[in-house]
Length: 309
Image (cartoon, rainbow, N blue to C red; front, side, top):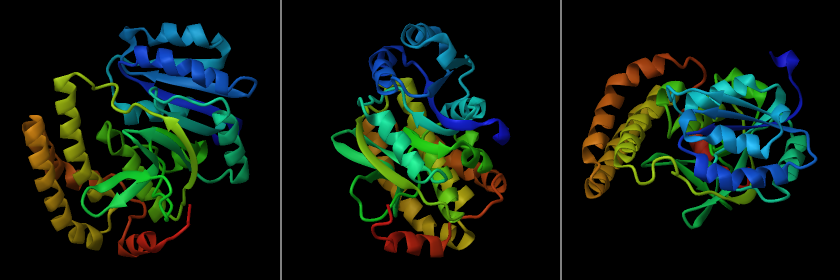
């Protein structure tokens, strides 16, 4: 497939209950890409809500592909399917609840031209802060990296990321079993362990975050389950054995603290189910990744790195 790709950029977006927010954000994408050779691919995991009409009203038919899947295979699988359909050298993973500024696409293309082989973490503004990429954390294992941090990111956040399409495919894309929430951290740890470094592009794009679960208690519980499970699975898959053993007390401490928070939110039961499921699934998840793993030397080097972004 790699020899079929042409230089250029495809915006990849996974949709789920996104019609209303996409109606606000997509026009800003179209304006930002005006006059530029940019294509769009939408993987819609909730096609009945009308996103297809929103897209058709904003983009010419030949400029986008629409991939509906009513089975809802998850964010990770949706991304993988859309990236696999891309025929350009680079893809921009962009959440549907992100607004682009008039010069955003041009700046992204310029950043790609500077170092075409590197992934790029695109800056997002959300919850009152500015963030660029994924950061390691001693308790929660992975968090959003604050803009301006002295060291570069582990890797890009799934909400705003540029990947060379071939690199994304080489690493198997996102681990689909994670479904959502943590799949970008899993890939980030694997990229870093293999020596791939991510550059930052701090565009400070407005990002809502969590639009697909807001106001739905069942989905909020599902997210609590996945976050608890996926922290365990990310560590099991991507950490070397020495680092994994060292991380056990920190993971346990994190989950104790998080359990108290989830209890206050009324989400303790799905959280505890997620922890239990993660422990059960950890051996199988580890076997499914046979590449380089993030070890103590990587962690020390990462924590010591300054100005690497």
